[in-house]
Amino acid sequence: MVGWGVTEIFSFTETDPDSLGATWGPLRLHRLAWRPGCDLPALLDEWESRLTYPGDTDTAAMVTLPSHADVLPLVHRGFAPLTVIAERLAGRSPAPRPSGVDVRAATRADLDVAVELNLHTVRYDAAFGMVTERPNTAEHLRTALAEVLERDHEAMWLAVDGDTPVGMIYVDMPQDAGWMERFASARPFAYLAHLGVRPDVRGTGAGSALVAHAHSVLDDAGVASTLLHHALPNPRSTPFWYSNGYRPRWTVWVRRPALRAPTGVSSQPERPSET
View 1 (cartoon, one colour):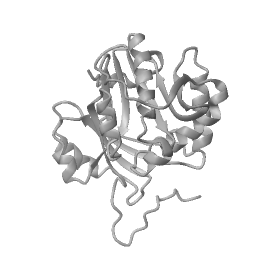
View 2 (cartoon, rainbow, N blue to C red; view 1 turned 135 degrees about the vertical axis):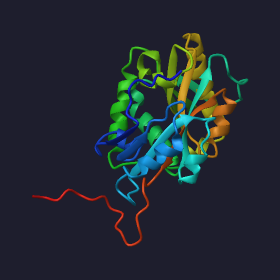
View 3 (cartoon, rainbow, N blue to C red; view 1 turned 45 degrees about the vertical axis):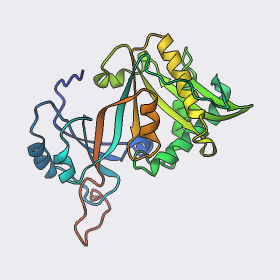
View 4 (cartoon, rainbow, N blue to C red; view 1 turned 90 degrees about the horizontal axis):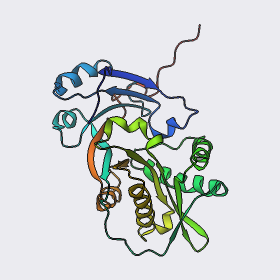
C-alpha cells in the first residue's frame, strides 16, 4: 500500500551536478504527485503552466502512477513510460538456469571491479534515457559502493568466470531500503539496487545466476518483497525481470525536456543575471 501523507501535488527539485543523484536523473525535475481518484487531465493542464526551462534536456516532468492505471492523458500530452518499479514476492523464482559462472560475496578488495561493472550498466542504460553518465559518476559510484561493502552483512555478490569477475549484484536489505516504503506491498522488503554484467557476457546466464543467488539469500532471510527499478525501453530488461518472478507495480512517465523549446528559442537554461 502507498501512504500519501501531505505530499505537494506539484514540486520542483534541482540536483547538485557534483553528486551521485545527478547520474540517476535530470538535474532539474518537476514532479506531479498522483493520488487515487485525482482528476489527472485537469492536474496535467494546470501543471503545464508551472513547467520551466523549455528545450533543456536536463529538465524533465515526471509522474509515477500504478502500472495498470489509465494513462491516456499522459500519452496525449507527450509523456512516455521510462521506468518501472517492479516487485517480486518471496518464493517466486524460476528453475535455475545453467551458467558457466560461480557466485561469491564481494569484499573490499573488489571495489575497483565493482565500480567498473556498475559503470558498464550506467553506460548501457543511458542509451534508454534512464540514467546519465556525468564526469564524476565513477567517483561517486566508488563512494557509494564502498559503503555497501562496509555493511555488517553480505549485500554484494560477483559472478566470476574462473578468477575473473564478469558481473555484480547488490541489494539493500530491509534496514537499508526504507526509502522505498511507499511502494512495497509486503513487509519486510528489500531493494535490488544493481545488476550488471560485462557487455561480452550478456545473454550467457551470468545475470540469472546472480539474481538466483540474491533471491536465495533474501528468501532465507525472511524478506517478503523485493523491489527494483528497471528501464522499460531496454529490450532485455522487461523479459528478464518478469521471467525471474517480478511484476510491474508502478510506472514512471517522463517528458524530457519538460517543455519543448519554441522555434528560434535557445534550449539552454536561463541563468540568473549577475548584479
